[in-house]
Amino acid sequence: MDATSFVLKGNVCYSVSPQEASCTAGGYLVCVEGKSAGVFAELPERFASLPVIDCGDQLIVPGMSDIHVHAPQYAFRGLGMDLELIDWLNTRTFPEEARYADLAYAERAYSIFADDLRRSATTRAVVFGTLHVPATELLMDKLEATGLITYVGKVNMDRNSPDSLVETSEQSAEATRTWIADVAGRYERTRPIITPRFTPSVTDDLMAELSRIRAEFDLPVQSHLSENLSEVEWVHELCPWSSCYGDAYDHFGMLGPATVMAHCVYSDNEETELLRRTGTYVAHCPQSNAQLASGIAPIRRYLDLGMNVGLGTDVAGGADLSMFRCMADAVAVSKLRWRLVDQELAPLTTQEALWLATVGGGSFFGKVGSFAEGYELDALVLDDSGIRTPRELSDWERVERYVYLAEEGGRIARKFVAGREVELGA
Ligand code: GUN
Ligand code: FE
Image (cartoon, rainbow, N blue to C red; front, side):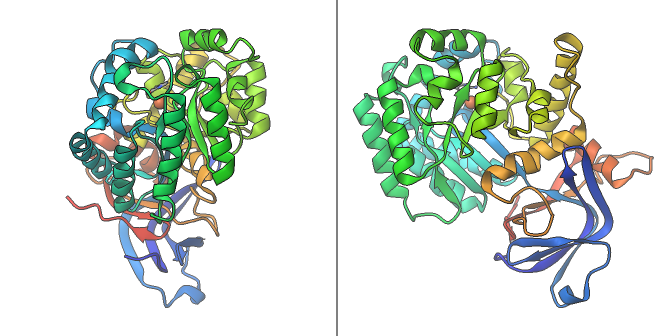
């Protein structure tokens, strides 16, 4: 189905604030030219001529934005989860990413990634590739074909990396310019994003050049920040001039509302204020933070400060692409943080997790993640009939339990991105 005008009829639930989800049983979600015209208990007369897609008793929720995921790491998800970040990068991740110099391998691996992402709850994603330009362009071609809307980054790495996965500063900048020129105007749904891997992998000279490229082409930025204690310490040694890790990016003009920084587990007051003041997005990746024993990010604090926060699976730090699992993990780790670390910061609620997965991350893409009038219409039609219970559940309870039990018997029946239906296939 093309971006068009239609009505979805079903049990419509979406976040109206971090604390509150609105549910309309047997409601009408109206899409006009790819955008929501609102949710109604009765279909207003002015929309009576639009085709109605009757979803019966199924749930209709906004599509989810995974704002931090590594496409090349999908191939080894679930393996080698016994190490902390730096050792995991050196022994598991870098050798795998080096394989994407081989386009035949990239073709096989990225076909699987794109196919699985298409059928997941994710409608938008902010994606790391590898440093290889041909493989990253192949990834972009494949993601474009899914119908999802994504930002994809060719990774930059010019230090502290193995010989099989490193560039000189000049090569890295040159390859980035080539890549941007190659993909300009090539896609409708897929955009480049500047991707310095993280400060330990990128020299100051390259960071400065990437900042110039970012400004010249008006591109967004993604990277990692304050994920792990040894990493924070290392950045302190590598950039002794910086006042905090975040300053090592801000110094080069890399922070702002078009930047996503993954993790921010150990951001101190100064760094938090820097992120808040610049409007930088924090990608909270709870499963990854648990699996790599990184820690627990103070997301309640970031929300209280009104910061931009969304969720990321961080595959393969996280093992799977499920944004429902990501929501459940965000709630679970916030409870552990509250119990074990800091009772000042209340745990997240499932309502807040839904808000983070939809509006929180979606806002990086514009008016995305809500069914309020004027938002781009990203929607999931959820069939929860396979999650059996003798109980009568409210629509919100059905959403809540879907978050926890999606993998047991949940099924995404239909999926729409900016008003276009995504082919889910087999
Ligand atoms: N920091 C630098 N690179 C990576 C990566 O690939 N994954 C995670 N989780 N953190 C990183
Ligand atoms: Fe990551």
